Image (cartoon, rainbow, N blue to C red; front, side, top):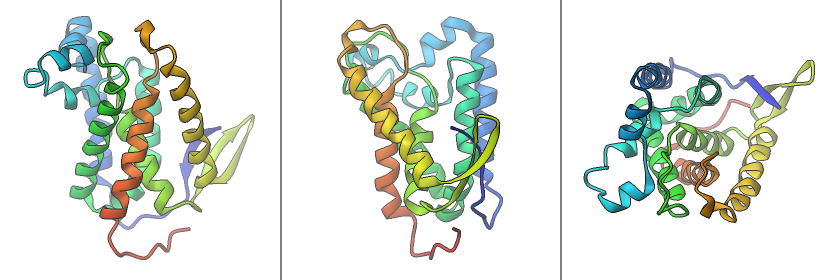
Length: 215
């Protein structure tokens, strides 16, 4: 299933969502021009952070806006574009920005818990975006998501689309734990899981008392 969009209406222009997308793209362009040296300096490296958390503190945030490839960037921004606007609409722009950053931090520390001695640079918005998915799932479970399946576009409930995504992360995450000692890089599944759970829980505190009339 490849998501293309959703049918959940919003009431305002999602300024923060659009700004985050632009910032991620611009940061990736800078990353490309800076090469490996830029990645080593600004990505989150677990072993380096554990050795000197104060000096490496900025990488907790800069790593959220870095990506391994155009495909990595495009996938994350597609999910943020589809699901972020509705979450921002419910939270408000300021709360949504704080929410996004906290989910990104939760994702990083979730991955860190399983890779403290790793020298592999961690980067990507996947953890923060996973938090957005967790929030969307809680607030709009019956929202219809248009997905590409084969040659057709089919509307499916967000509960199924995001739920299946999370189940895949769980299985992949637990499988990755058994091979964590290899230190060969790959997808940071535990970051996805941590970000998703953080987003789901934070939504209970941030969504307010607005009624949901979107499905």
